[in-house]
Amino acid sequence: MSITTFIIISIIKSVAVVGILLTAVAYSVWLERKVSAHIQNRWGPTRVGPFGLLQPLADGVKFIFKEDLTQPHVYKPLYIAAPILAVVFAITSISVIPFGNWVDLGPWGTYLQITDLNIGLLVVLGITSMGVYGIALAGWSSNNKYSLLGGLRASAQMISYEVSLGLSLVGVLIMAGSLSLREIVDSQGGVFWHFIPRWNIFHGQTLAFFIYLISAYAETNRTPFDLPEAESELVAGYHTEYSAMKFAMFFMAEYANMVTVSCVATLLFLGGWHGPIFGPPILQAVMPVFWFCLKVFFFMFLYVWVRWTLPRFRYDQLMAFGWKVLLPLAMANIVYTALVVALRAQHR
Amino acid sequence: MFHLILFLFFGAICVAGAVNLLVQSHPINSALSLVVVMASLAAEYLLLGAEFVAAVQVIVYAGAIMVLFLITIMLLNAGKEERTKSSRVATLLGVPAVMIGAVLVAWTLLHRSNMQTPVHIGALPGNVQDIARLLFHDFLLPFEVTSVLILIAIMGAVVLASRPEAVDRGARKDG
Image (tube, rainbow over all chains, first blue to last red; front, top):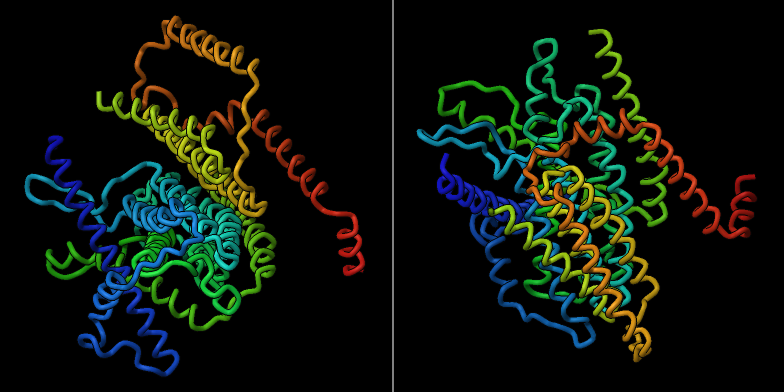
């Protein structure tokens, strides 16, 4: 493949993936409003389009035309930079996520992934760990007590849960023997006893899966860990002073992070795009992507479901749970997985 | 060629960030400049083929340690630094001394012949397997000793940070 074709294909892939991600983000907001409404025995958005399906579009237009207030007491350079940082880091991490297998397009072919790095998982973790700056700086630069408390809570919470999140993935890495997301998915092909898929969640990593899921909820500041923006005590937390598109950028960053976290959970624990494949050739080509999207959708639905089911933690409970329960469990899982893998290698 | 351009570009950003760190009078801006330095160093490691070190640089330094710096600055609510006129001795002796030092370092580096060959990606051990073999096989003892040292440091910090009355109260609650 020549360098020109490579660049053209990369640009097409990047535009397509970012476009799909932003659409997914918009429709996750719609999903959240719709599901929360039905949980509370309401209808949710119904007026704009069938089933309120055009509501995200109307919201976007509204955000653009709202007055963009900048209070006189804020520290302007960082106040403007914070939402940009948040949304940039949230969108960048999608670049290493693989969505499906090799696609053959006559003379060219490509993986359904912007780029395949052999440290893919570390890139995702690194970019997510940088995402905390957006929230922390928004809290500080707003020059407001509630914002500052929200920003501080967010940074402390994200650093604490990043530890157990990272350690819960080590078991999967030991089993796959690689940091490339594509190789991790490839290692989960096949079935046990003819019907149980060989996904990591059924393959000794069940505990790690739940540790990852809980830590991921804390990482993305979602209920029951949404203390950084707890409305009953902090007004709106770190984005109290933000309005119009700047506020919408924090919103987009939160939902884009949720999509990324769901993608990583799918790839590492639910076998990525593996699933039953049947039917005519054209259907067989599309099925893997369908399975991947279905699994990601499941996690997005779970996010909403949990948010409207569980109450919020108290702050000391949150910290105690992260450091005294999740961290030891994650370490125990690493020791157990390493022992099992080492013993199996000896028996062979 | 493209690598060289990128390498010089990130090197320039790194130096600019370091200079900005010293020039800025507000601690938050200085801390953020340090983040820029860390991130551009990670890009330099990546260009040298040390992908694992680059990722760890971002996760540990830019993503965790600098966030803790930022939290500390926010909690203390540190204000702007006050500018003083620096002493004449520092200006007269300091600036030439820094220049001489920089020239010495550059001269030493340029006169080591093996420093001048360009490094290609993959030429040096940099991937995860190589680093794991080095850490957990060749240098296992120093690695483990370092981890014990860090553990001692953490315990020391806990002891220093916990006030005696707080320990008493905790003991009474337990007993």
